[in-house]
Image (cartoon, rainbow, N blue to C red; front, side, top):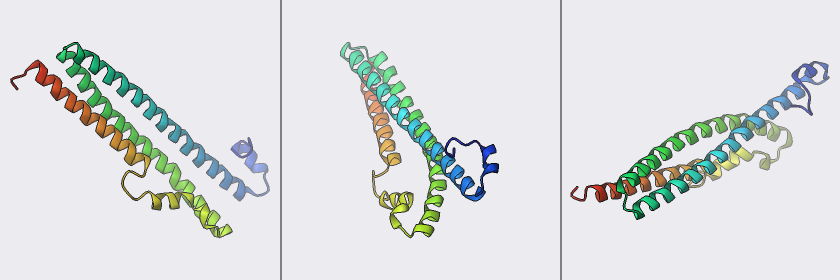
Length: 164
C-alpha cells in the first residue's frame, strides 16, 4: 500500500493518478514477491523430500528389500512430476506479476529515458539460452530426479524379478 494508506485514503489525495499508479505497482510487487517466495519454499520442500526418499531408497536396497525400494522409487517419480506441475503453476503466477511490473518499468523509462530501468525486459532478453532461468533450471531438476527415480525403480524391479 502507499505508505500504509488504505484505498479509502486515496480520495483525500490531491494527485489520485499518481496514488493509483503507486497502488498498482505495490499490488504487482506484492503479488510477485509472494509467489516468488512461495516458489522457493516449494523447491526447498522438494529437495528435502527427494533427499528423504533417496535415503529411504538406499536404506531399503541396502537391506535387499526391493519391493519397498520400488515403492519409494515410484513415490519419488510421482513427487517429482507433481512438484514440476506446481512449479509451472507458480511460474505462471510470477509471470503475471512481472507483466504488470514490466509495463510500469517501461512507463518509467519514458519519463526518465534510463535504459537500466527496464529490468524485466532486459532479464527476459538475457535469459533466452539454455538453463538460464529458474523455470528451466527447476524443470531440469524435477525431470532429472524423476528419471533417476524411474531408473532406481527399474533396478528395484529387476531385484524383485531378476528374470525380467
